[in-house]
Image (cartoon, rainbow, N blue to C red; front, side):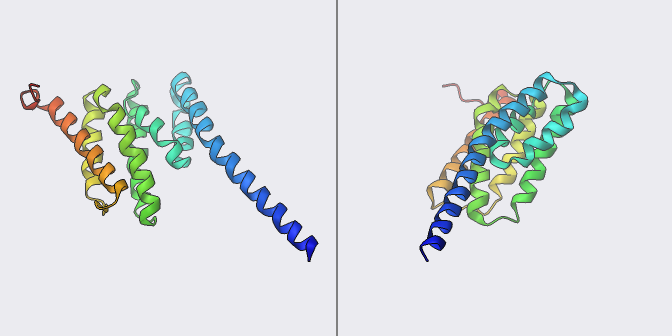
Amino acid sequence: MKALMLTALWTAMLVAAVWGLWHYHEPLLAQRWYAELQNGPESEAPTQLDQLARLGPAGLPYLVHAMDDSRESVARRARRAVWDAISGWEKLPPRDAALRLRTLVDALDARVESFGPTAQWEAGQITVRLLQWPIDGARPEGRHIVAACERILARTEARRHPDAAPTG
């Protein structure tokens, strides 16, 4: 009995260690693949964007950055990868989807003002789609997502219609 408990304990510790290392490792992989995307040839971009997309939440901020890449084919593929990710989240439990939604809106919120016109327009379209998501506005996570979406839309609209920008 003691040997069985000891084996179970070691197994649980090993699983926890592997899980912890993987989740620590994901952001490092995302940074590395994004650096390769920025510095590598355009022909390798599809592979690097796919790798970032497969990382889930850890890769999202880098996909958002790539939405405004100076190489149009890279930016287009990054925008498509974000849309594909959103489509995949529809199948997730609401709590799992909320984590991804928050990661995405936080990344868009941080970058949208520095985007060029095409990426900014796309960020606005993505944000409109996210606001159609069944978000629980009573929960702090839901309120955060809605507030970030509202900020993104205000900035993309102000950029598109300069006369509509607040005069402070």
